Image (cartoon, rainbow, N blue to C red; front, top):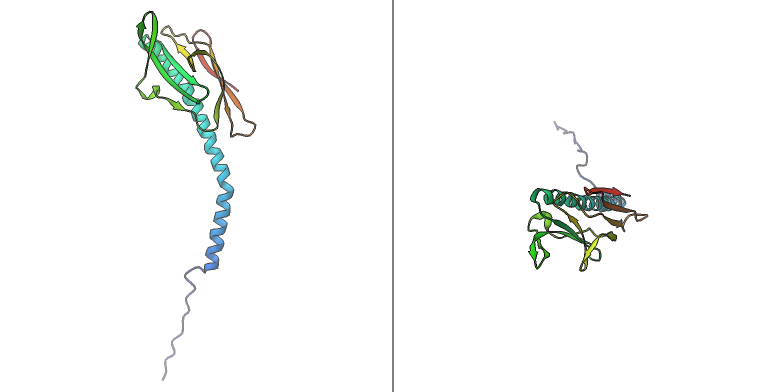
Length: 172
């Protein structure tokens, strides 16, 4: 007597090469469609962060000037798209001498690519403009206009320092 074993056929446990190619192609197309949106979102975030950092630095040195009873200055280079902080070191021959600030907030910062300083309305010292923050709480009146070159319509914002107490605000 012959015993007949039923031949069980197991379903395929893998994918064919054609199926894999189709899936990889679809994922590539979806990635290509999403990438410009992702890059634009990252650029917009970098621009917003740079604007916020500039305003925060200005507000911070206003507070430091009062706290330490010493003048601080926010310097801006329109051509290079950079800003940095200096503080009063003392007087030499009746002229104010300023020194670099070693702390993180004083280091030179560069605006992200595509964010351009288009106009600075502030006092000038050599090749750079500056906004002075004085020990009595007052600050120079100033305006810094920034334009996002990568955004459609190239929207501009203006950071203004106004009033006797140097209130900092944004004007779009």
